[in-house]
Image 1 (spheres, rainbow, N blue to C red):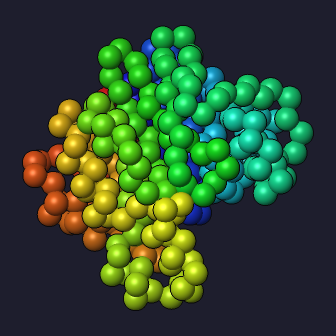
Image 2 (image 1 turned 180 degrees about the vertical axis):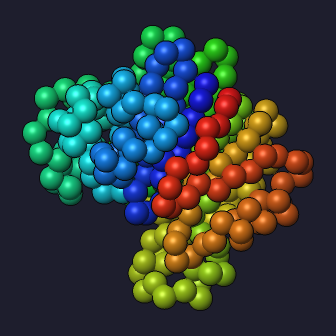
Length: 253
């Protein structure tokens, strides 16, 4: 299995996963041309993608879903509630090939299975993902809301993960955001902190690597996030931080 974070953060999210001839995009929060060029930099063609799977309705995850379909002919996989909310929020435009799934169910693409897990994040009918292929499990776990029951158990089953590490508590407290937004971020429907992310990864005894994702541009820093994880984790684990502005390299699972 191969994975690339094409971009990660409140300014846009998209992750590419490839295994057994199946090519998938998770979320469509960056422009089509950005996704096309970043995939081409890694020798991949966006028109070969088998589907775009949307996690929830927020613009940084769903804004360009219509473009991906109309320009590149990619099927869109989404829950009905998420699609309705995303269309109202972003104005997705005409859609011809929408394939609905139910949150909590798996979506099959040949020998690749994508398990969807409902989250308490304040999006509409939001989910995270576990991609299973050849007995390997890759987690795509951002916009979590909070560390909900059963999440650590799922992390323990993974071989690799894109894990939300949104904010540093001290930076958030001292930062410029208004009080209501700070409450939302650290509340039950917001995001998880570097410390919470690191504690979750302590459950991942099988993990080969973790890519810290959805870092805040105002309330976090890649160096701070990585150091927090290194301080908390009880073992050596390959750690990366996904960029808010460009793609990562190729990750192998």
